[in-house]
Length: 95
Image (cartoon, rainbow, N blue to C red; front, side, top):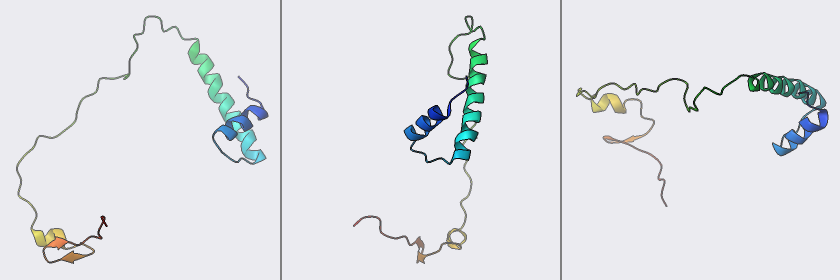
């Protein structure tokens, strides 16, 4: 499906994009190619393919919780941009 210049400009207006003439032509070609690829995909027989949200099974990849010693407080605060005693000093976020 070949898009016209007017269709690309309409899409650009909907997306609130300002395009130069060169960009309009470039997007016309690119969007036309994308639509042609979808036309090819529409010809594939998918009658025996069940609907699915994922193509592969999902698995959580998480490590098990293990008790480990913490870093010393001085090492944690060593790179703090601002600190007050044994604490990080941050700007107030509430009035």
